[in-house]
Image (cartoon, rainbow, N blue to C red; front, side, top):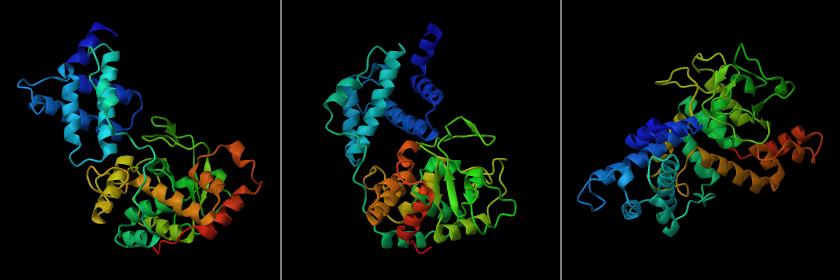
Amino acid sequence: MSTTETDDAAERPVAYFLQDIAYQGKSERTQAAYERVLREFEAFLQTGANRSETPLTLSEATHRDCMAYVHTLRDGAADSTVATYASYLHRFYAYMTQVGAFDSNPMSLVVEEMGETIETDPARRDISIPEMRSFLRRIEHPLDRAVVVTLLKTGIRAGELCNLDQRDLHLSDDPREDATVRPQLDGRPDSLYVAADPKRGATINGEQRQASNKRQRDTVIPVDEELTTVLRDWLSIRPDPVSNAKPLFMGTRDSWGQRLSTDMVHHLVETRAREQDWYHDGAGAANNVTPHYFRHFFTTHLRDRTGDRGIVKYLRGDVAQDIIDTYTHDWGDRVRQVYERHIYRLDV
């Protein structure tokens, strides 16, 4: 690392770090989360809330300053949230030490002594199907309904939903006059194709993608009657797309005709969840309903109804092609039959 770069990192540490994680492919949402925590800690050091009479810079912070900040987080935040914020600081300091901008990482000792941990698979809020139906009845906007019902009925991730193009949906009675579908969906009406290949920054179908799909295999997911109805309602009023890739889901407000971003999906779901009292600041994944919660809801309820973990894993995109090949040659038909027999109704 050159002397100029080291000086730049030392003088503008937060901006330097954020630029580097952007180069590393971190999503805009992740970048924003890091910036929020780092700026809060920076303000904590500047205002003297660390009990020091002299405002400190990030490079001057000691492990006691870091511990004092973490302690303030414990008032009202879930343990997993406290641990997540601490991990952001720890990674920031470790990186700045590695590039030579800072002398040491004061968070090393803090994270070793912390009692809080990040829950990788937290026990989530238990929402029944009748409660979810009540939640959906309050959502009237065609786009919002289509996004939420698609997440609930398919178990796909927010990024995977954003990456869907119109060619990825095959409806037997399609309201789109110019609808063309992927070859993989030929002969498979009422299906959704979720590809494994989109990566953040890659150009797919002529458009650079801002989110990655995280599945191990391409997946064809059945579209039942309820989801068909909701999607048809959306397709009948959707804006003309800005992109030639023809995204399936586009903005209808400030970003008219532009592909939905994961931030927009998270904001949409968070807004609706707050209205239902299912989202509170600092509550963490155990209590808050987010787009990923719908994947958990899909997995839990469909697995309990079918008793078939293999099919649920296939729908989630969690198993590779060689695993699927150990089942039956008519796997696609089997998936549809099991799915249509057991998928919950949402009364939309």
